[in-house]
Length: 281
Image 1 (tube, helix red, strand yellow):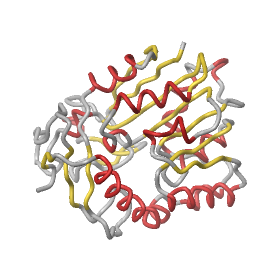
Image 2 (cartoon, helix red, strand yellow; image 1 turned 180 degrees about the vertical axis):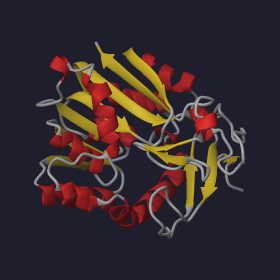
Image 3 (spheres, one colour; image 1 turned 135 degrees about the vertical axis):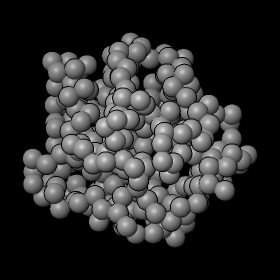
Image 4 (cartoon, helix red, strand yellow; image 1 turned 90 degrees about the vertical axis):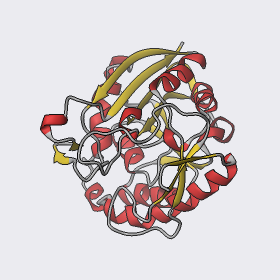
């Protein structure tokens, strides 16, 4: 049953998720509208939304010239956008086909970036050097079972004074029944160490189907997310919650500027995203 909580070994779940994300690559190369990047001024919608917030916490409000590590970069649309904004970008992902697509996009558009294939939970050991900014956004950490280990990678990658940025789907959103006619909680908000099992041939973008539909995700409440970052030694600079998503979580969501939202009468009832900015002192 979709959303069932099960005990599963991390490596088994990780391998299933990797197969699924490998399958998504050719579908997303179509669905993401990569031709738009032929315009040298084009930035992804995600980065266009994130940059104004991130810049508020950077020296002189500029990303230009900063070394940036993009964790869970997928096919590189956001990585290429960050490089176009002026950062020196290293993209990290566990999917070799995704990184091949990212590298092809960068080469086609004349963008320089470095691509590293590794699990995000092993990023510090796999990536050379340290960074002014570690960035991740959006739809990322539900795929990870151990946020303490995740936060340790972030701290290890950052230089002293470096900045971490994440925008992601809100855990209260993920607890909802996406098919219900109203805002109804169906899935756990708090995790208990078990994974949620999903079988879905579709992806969040495009109409194609994947050959490996089974995936595993882990619920992480805000207390766990923030707690892992603080416990790792980061200092919280900014926290915010948003009303829109860059993908349609539920069929009831309506298209709005910058993505999708609940119908207007429900828009103030529940957050769709959260944003955290933190610093390594």
